[in-house]
Every structure is written in structure tokens, then in C-alpha cells.
Length: 484
Image 1 (spheres, rainbow, N blue to C red):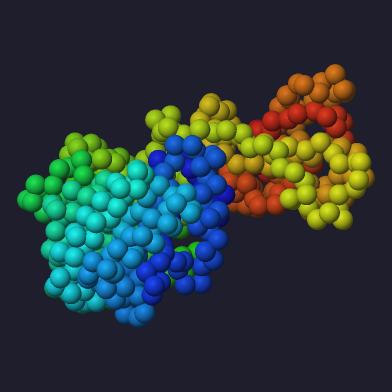
Image 2: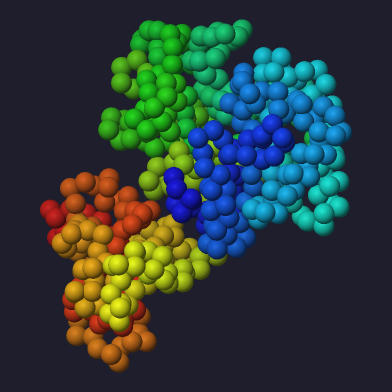
């Protein structure tokens, strides 16, 4: 998912995961990731003025054995190190225009993750000093941290004390089980990676130390954990597994499938996954001996109802790029009409930023516009539900042909009900043209209509006036279905 594809109209906060920390205690990018992404992402606020953008620092692999494992413990270990990082970090927030931070240290005090006994106390002291520095800066930066559901890892957190210095806690109420269970007392049995019964038990650990429910944000997973069954005749929770499930085409990692991949399997099989109502999770066997647990619209709703009943503050997800093309998972937990977002149209882009100078003919530049559609206000029509834009050209054919990024006609797009016989007097009128996507590649066709494709240009028909404004609505289909 590129930065421009992020569905900011369905989000209140966006965590950019992950930022790493360099040896001199400065925020840096993950290995093999350009730091430019941290700059570009700030532009998303133009599409949702109320959006809060936060940098998430750490992550599971950050504390894997290697060059970064000792970074968190070392930073929080003494006042000098803490002060150095805090000063650098506040500079990062100011430079990039971010609204706050989520610390994802996995996990303080855990000897299997490079932790030490003093981590818990030092972590709390660090948050206290960071909060004091934020207050002194006059800024209103948000500070949060992620917490596990496992007592094994949670026991090193001074949760009650930490809540005094943060805005909320992100509870990772997923990855409760996986193939790693084979190496602990649970053993090699298939169990759902998210389970409302176990989430409730985990939250009891917070209630025991008097953490207010409003300090907790419930985590939801847009993916599932998979196993390979030892015996296909034994497929219910508790049955034995022999290893991780097969890799997905996109995620390309054994033992995990994205929401999109799961929905594709269900669609191809034409079946229905088993619903465990008490645990609020679905699971199924697929491709012979693979088993997976996951959430869908119904189980998400059960978890939301639970969060509301308990008085939790909200929801966070890992991760939006694991959703399907239609944002089915995100739409099932979000409602744009309740979010303080805006769907402003984009200003036209100067063509010199789109095409090389040698393609721009002096004195013959056509009318063009970058148009957005699919806002909350358009929910009643058939346009896509997430804002995106296409560059539309109207003008003399010899000029437009210079600017095409494709040869020939703009296949697979065909204009329907495009107004005819327009003239100069229509300059200030905004028309609506319907466009249908004709292709046997249904998935690709829908992808264009739903999210847009970078670099796509739609050329208006010849009968369109060079100085006429257009809004366009996209429909999808194949030739055989046009009559219906």
C-alpha cells in the first residue's frame, strides 16, 4: 500500500510502523526503507485535517538478536541516555510534523528478548521524563505504548504507573497463539490467534492493578494465523499441528495469511468458515490440511460490542495494508460519518510536475484537472468509497497524444452518457460523465475503480470541449454483462 492509498477518511490516528533508533539515539528508518516515507506521509493531512499521525518505534524484529536488541534497554537505563533520546525525538516530531509516538518495545524485562530486570522501572521513568519534556515544549504530542496480553511478558511492565504518563495503551489482542506454542507449555495444538474469552482474561490483569478501562485501546488483527494439521480428521481447537500453514501468494510467509488472502480462499472454495460464537472468531480448514483462525465483519462486531460494554477507548488495527481491495475489514469497523475527517478535492497539479518538459508543447497545453471522488458525501452513489484521483485531459488530439502514458485509446475505459455538443458557454458548468471499465481481468478492473492506479490517465472523448469541467463516476464490468 503506497502512502497515497492510505484510507485516511476511515482513520482518526495513523501509526507509521516502524521507526528504528540509531546508535546515537535518533529516530531512523527500518533497514532497506527510505527515510523519505516519513516525510511524504505528512501530506496525508491534506485529505483528513483531523488525522493524527504518529511514529511507532520498535516492533518485534527490533528486539530480535542483533544490532538493535540492546537499544531500548540502554536508552532507558540512565538519565543521560534518556535525555539525549528525548531531545532528539522531540526534534524529529517537529521536523516531520507528527502528532506523537507509540512505543512498541517487545518486551522489557524479558530475558528471551534481550531484556533485564531493571527495564520495567526504567521504562516508567523514561515515560515520566518524556511527558515532562512534552509539557515543557508547549506541544500537545500524544504518547502511547503497546502492551501484550500474555502475563509472561506483561509482568515486567509497571502498567499502573505507566498510565499516568501516556494517553492510552494499545492492547495487542492478537497473536495469542501461533506455531511458537510448540515451544512452550501449551504445546502443538491449533488455537485461534484472537479469542474474546482469552482477551477478557487478559484484561483482568489490568483490572487487578486498577487500570481504568478508558486507558485501553483494543487491538484487532486484519490477518489470521495458520497451521498444518497433523491429522485432517481432527480439525477443532486443541487438535495437533505439525507446523505452520502454507505461504500466501502476497504475504509469502508460512503461518500467516492477510484478510485479503483469507477472503480469496473463501470465495474460491464457496464455503463458510466455522463460527465460534463464544470466542468471537472464525476458523476453517483449507487446501487439504491447512487450518486458520481469523476475524470477519461479524466477529469484529462482537469484539466492538465487548469493548463498548467494558468502556474501552477505541480500536486499533494491525494493519490496514493487509485488507482486501475494497477495504472490507476496515469498513466493517469504521463509519466515516462519525469521524472528524474532510474530503477536500485536490487542487489541479501543474503539468510540469507530471510530465517532462519536452512533452509539453508551448502554447497548446490542454485543460486538465485532478479530480477526487468517493467521499462520505457520495455514499449514496456508485462511486468508490475511498477518495482517489485520476488526471483528466481534454483538448486538441495532437496535444493530448503528446501527454499520453499509453499508446492508442484509453482501454479498458469506455465513457457512457458523456454530454455531447458542448461549447464555450459551458465553461463554468460541471458535468458528470460515467466511465465503465471493460476488461476480462475483473480483479484488476475493480482495483482501478476502487483505489486508482498510479500514473493512470483518462482521456476525455473528442466531443468534449477543451474548457469544460468534469466529475466522473466509475463502474466496472465485462462486455457480456453490459446489458444487465
